[in-house]
Image (cartoon, rainbow, N blue to C red; front, side):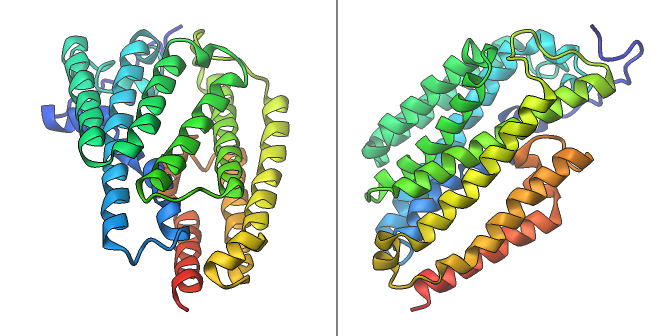
Length: 304
């Protein structure tokens, strides 16, 4: 069904702004997970490692933008019927499907070639991420749980790629924490989409998995608890203490707890669009907690 009987006109953007919107540069914040190994792997003081990881971050930004382009092509008809997503460049008619396909090929090619030239060790993770997004756009999103699990796996690949660029072995606790945190965020987004579909009058895309609010509430509660446990275990794990020479990272746990609960509160009180990337930029309390967490981690890891 249509989002509304008489939808308000969509404001037209210039071609460059439309391309930037299609690439969703505001979502590049999600690729910050690539930097995890650099911070917790004692790599910030090594110029070579910093360059390799920042290059990996840039490559993931390029490839993730290509994935968004592909997803918008696949979602064209559904987006046109959605009260909010119809403003996306392809659905709004600002960029043609043919032009979007060319942009997808250019971005994906640039990402792969860049990885092979500058950080070959990262290529398998970048290619795996790209294939995962193809599977998500054209199949996995139709199945309950598998849709969110595939998204969460993409975040784990980011962490692994950042560690491979250095190279170091990632902590099992950090990988688990990343995976479950992404599950938590994914279930929160699905819950928002479900509630939005009822209150705004839009229907969920029939190519997406279907959920019930009560089930998503349980999944969010479970995953939020596991995130906190996994991160806490990482801070006090003997290997972590040995690498950083301190067990004081435990004092960063309250920031993680606040961040998790803040997002959950926003989901239940309508304080977010459901998109974690958008919420991070717009919510000052959450951004403040992330900044403080980062500063305290840097102080504890490098201050000695």
